[in-house]
Length: 280
Length: 354
Image (cartoon, each protein chain N blue to C red):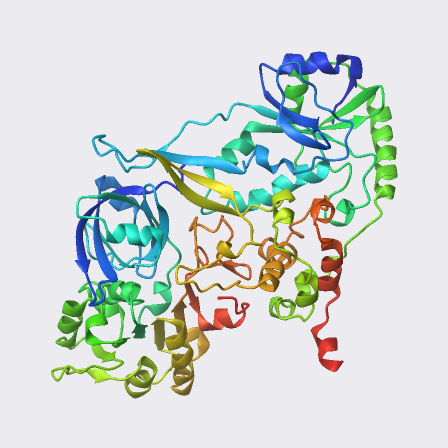
């Protein structure tokens, strides 16, 4: 019997400090056993449990794309016991990865316009989605791609080199924004994500899906904007967070109604969430 | 179906014969209560009991269970890599469990044995276990098994059902595993088929008549989850609750667990422990935000899970077998029978009219 609780051993290959507050680091992980990489076959939007021997596990969205071979990337905010330990680790250290976990919705998105709306450090699985869609083998499967991504300040944006590179491309429409900045050279938007969404996002129609990931406050104020733009609730796709342990729908804590966020989510359409208790 | 007559004079001998082939577990009296424990050689289960204080779920799902071990010593080649450990999954027999408790394993199995994922610890222990039931002739006042999908002589989940006739047991063989168990014990006297069947039928009828309390569950699946969730009665139901979690620890169908690491010097284990939806730590986020921050939310979660979410998820009744432990053990007299009826009879429209 395969043990779904057993992590694959991985080596930390590289650690990148992403933000000016140094609270977000990206961990590039390489499987110790090459066969495990094949078994870990994932899609953007899924997550994994990162396992630190002696500390425990944490559920983290996968920031790399399946089109990037040879490694996995996770961007981790320093919050609790496991993440604090991870932040003190060094390249070469051994940890574990268990997954991929959760479902994804890429069948729905094929042939559609995709509008990505992200805020703060919840941009990780959205990065995965962008890299995946921009891959030369996948780009023709999607129509227009819009990205609205905001952070408190320029130094709090994740993946700044990649953002700059996407800005120069003509096959993706980038709308980067910050809440505020005193940088005179800042050449992108200033304003909260809901405002920029209202100004830049294409109107909703049956061919367009919005993917939203961000702090609750951003989601709360972006939703009325999307309603105004004509997005129906089954065209708004969101990713939820919950305290998790097993990640496979067994240990019982991450339910909303009868759905487990770890296994039946973490991706839900707003239409699905409308029929679930507001307990998240 | 085969019936065997076990003269109680041969009971101890039979168990003695079984001892080498099975690990035997049964109820024994411990001060005030009956508890389940592994029987040592020659130790007899005490079958003169109503039911065990806690459910038998720990035989398959221990309260604390080691999952993996690892070394943190960097001079070892496999340091920081989690390793599976060997566990004793040799055949074990659970002797004398009540039919309600036996039925609970089937409800819980749905959680641990899913199309996508199999829980290897629960399933290996479950598959290693043979379930020897003891029919209830004297149910207690908190039992409501007959309206919770089972009954005092219920056979689902059992390999063998023992019916106590005073001087002897009638053993009804329900599975090939049950038959092997009987053979291994050396109990060979076949009972007269028709007579045994008739005796059991009569005793069953009498036992069922003694069940004095019931729940109504017929409307639960038709109710809207959102309506029940938003219903006004939760405040009142949760008012007295002290969130002690006793209900969840005693319950045969509560399966939630936590996963923790424990380290001593340079070696560590990953283990799982029973957890409870009654506790705030069960759902608190790393940020400090807690989607079930209040007692009312947590009490609602427990009853909604058992009586609505489970009903909707599996379409086969409530996540409760009517053993009555949570009623007997609750320090503030919260009664699932009352809550089940409130939920089953709730009409959100009549609420708007009043």
